[in-house]
Length: 276
Image (cartoon, rainbow, N blue to C red; front, side, top):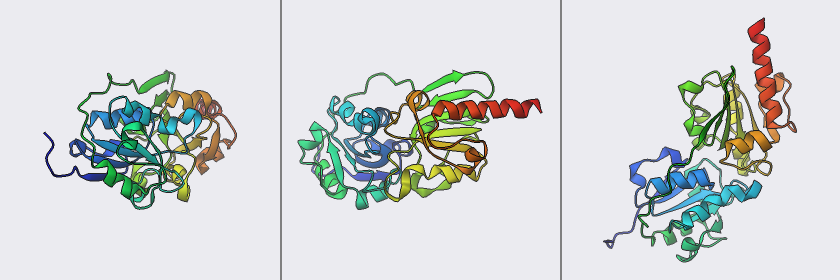
């Protein structure tokens, strides 16, 4: 039974960086609004959520999660990537402007053009749907077993010690969480790719690259319009590079190349170095 108290509004730099306190809450988070992020939000039992639209991108993947959550009866909205930094929950609620809202959110008067802070207040009228999302989405794929192995991870949060020394192609945006360099990647991969999320305000969509450069990890981003954000296999199969860090540039990788080219150069370089 619903009490007279309103659910809390919580902020998080990523939907992967919030725990059980999200249950029944309104979560303003810095993740893109893709399906995998929406799935994670639904698993947390949120009452409602606000994401970053990540520049919409190919097939409007940056907001595909809004429709996913609508089918579960969960209000959800997205702020413009050019109004607040992706990967930065406090900035979202401070500066974000709503660009898209699903039907349950519209029913609560959360609408495009509204300040994120005001939208969050409207969403406090949401009642948790109590509906479980469909069975877990498969999100990690081994695309090549030959060393260095090639992994496709729909979320960079899935990277772990087992991905050390491998090539990691992710569906995640290329922004640091809360601007913290330690969030660039949890594993010491040989190389990594991300989605540029339309790059966005303050260049937020590509800030992981210099942080990974400092760790000697070659990294780049693919254009949001070339590959579906949240879909690592699309990053690999469809992605076209927009930015690379210095480590990648030294290897001859440059914007305009395909993600497949990036991976091929990294793996060929590793093979040559192994033979010398």
